[in-house]
Each structure stands twice: as structure tokens, then as C-alpha cells.
Image (cartoon, helix red, strand yellow):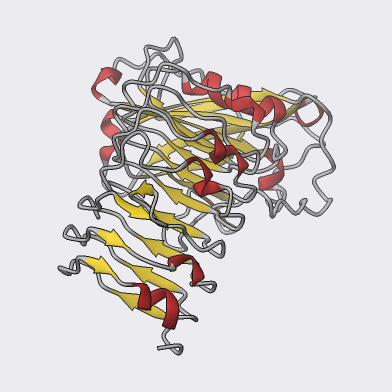
Length: 366
């Protein structure tokens, strides 16, 4: 068994993980227990799996409390400190089911899924996870207090947390770039506040929030006249999109004249969420006509392959720079700390340049 690297027991009727797993599966890297709803206990020396990086316990909602070391009643075992991804979604975890010290050992953890559980508060020790990049708390409907987050956090999902009363200021987290919010909060205001202290001002940012009544005009086509000082005084574009879920494409062109769109008469209240994105100038540094040395007009047109655009609108603004950014010819800064969990076939942002038509296409999937 010391040659075993992957163990997949998804959707089986297993009831107990015996101590022999920790004793003999010494090189196990991935352990998938998704949907093992009859699983009651994880026994013994589970923390000895020193090579384990990915553990999926989602929908193991039959876990019961049992006595560990003859004294402490716990639902969750001691996890190995090698873990990088831990999925405890929909495990029926309530207050007290997550021990305070459970996060103190997980020094390598990058991804933590806790969505769909019943706790009202999380241990404050979650802020001590030094490498945590992604935290998912969506649909934790009893959560009343939002915890302090690790300074390393990059992606935060917190939709459907309807009981939240205490919410932390997200502007403190300098690597945070992708957020899904939980209540009627202006997504544009949240994104701009994140930019105040963010260390990644020349990369994309994306915020999804419940739809709020806004005064902005949303149209399918927006033409923006860049002022003569646009590159020195501003750092990027702020895109606000009212649309359905899915991937949307925004085509950017260089225009000769400026159009002034009329206010749209669409009923935007029909959409549950609004997404707000930040596109830094530096992400367009490879576009030949995107040149900071002269004033130009640029149009933004929203489109998508499913033709939902009949009820879709976009608004575009310039984001004022807090300090002058570098020259477009300079190589981009390495922001390896600003981690994301992207998939090649579905990135949050992707820029495609068509040299034949000189069009820029931004593919945006939150």
C-alpha cells in the first residue's frame, strides 16, 4: 500500500476510515471521499499521511462525534500538515465541530472549501493559515460573523450568507482580486476600495455582487474618449456588467469619433447579480495601437455566443491612479503571490487580440 498515490472512494457506503490507512498509505497524495454519506468516523493516525495534498470530504454529512485520545470529542480528525486543498463542503458542520487548533497545523493549505455548512462562526485561527489563497463560504446561511482572513487570500466566495452581521473591510487584503459577495453591496465601491491597498494594480480584478439600484447608464456599446493625460493619471478601465451568468465577451476597438449612448430602458432588476471588473492598462501593453503617447477614442461592445445581449448592458469608466505606473514597454511584474485557481478552458479573464481587425476581445467569466 505504500505505492498507492490516489485513493478514490466517492459515493461508496464506507462507514469508517480505519487507522491502517494512516499507517500503511504513506505516499498517498489524493484521497477522494465525496458523497460518502454513511461515513461516520475517521479513526487513528490520519495525520501521518505526510504526502497527502488533496482531501475531499464534501457531502460527508454523516460524520459523528467520537472521542479522540480518550478525552476530546471531535468530528474532524487531525489533518496532515502537507495538505494543500481541503474540501469540507456540506459536511453538516456546526459551531464547535471545527476545533480551534485545526488550522494551526495546516501551514501549506492553499484551498479551503467550507460552503453549505451550519456554523455561525469560524475559529479565529483561520487567519493563521499563512498560504491560504482561496476560501469558499458560500451558502453558510447561519454565518453571522465574517472572520479575519489570512493576508495571503486571493479569491473569496461568500454568496448566500444571508445571516451575516459583521463583515470585515476587504481593502486590507493586498492580494485579493476575485470576490463573490453575499448581500446588497455596491460591487463597484467594493472593487475600488480593494484597489486602495491592493498590491496587484496591474492585473485583473473581478467582483460579483447582488444587484443594487445604480445610477450608471448601461448600454451594449460605449465609446470612451481618453484625455491627453490618460496614461499618467489613470491606471485602467472599470467595467460594470448587468447580465446573466456565463461567459461574456467585450470587444474593444479604436474609434475615430465619440458616441454618446442614451440611457438604456432595460429592466435591469431582472438580473440577480452585477459583476464589476478592473482591466489595467498594463494588460493591454502588447496591443500596437494602445499607445500612451496620444489621445484616442475607444469603444466597448458587449457580445456573447448565446445572444443574451438583448437584455445585457455595460458601463465603462476610467480608474484614477494613486501613483504613476510604469512604462508600457517595461516587462510586467511577477505577481506569483496573487494566486488563482484557473482552468485553461474557463479563465476569469482572457485577452485575445485579432491583428487582422485590430480588435481586442476580453472574455470574462466570473
